[in-house]
Image 1 (tube, rainbow, N blue to C red):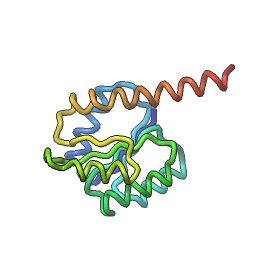
Image 2: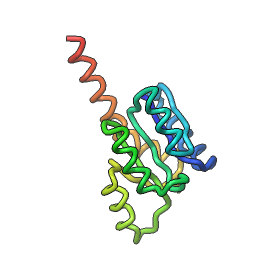
Image 3: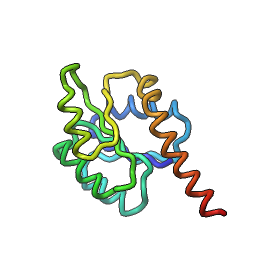
Length: 135
């Protein structure tokens, strides 16, 4: 599984890398801080999952919409810090094209537990594609 991580904040990156390490099913992780870097990386390969942070230099909703157009078959997961009254903010992120949203303030273990079922679906889809091509 190839993961794209779009976030300019080192602390959030560190927590996500810890969570991804707990998953154990990742082949490569590409780190980007801007959409320009993301565009360059997308030209050189595809990604199974893209994780999008809240404070990229571009507006995060615009970044999600851009990534959905650039990587239409990629599982797009956004994260931010949310209050319990932020349901409308989460819905706007989903409406912009994200497949899922989670709170970055969770521990690495909790993030891994939330990501595992989402990523498992991606792995299952890839395996069924590989099996049908091999048959």
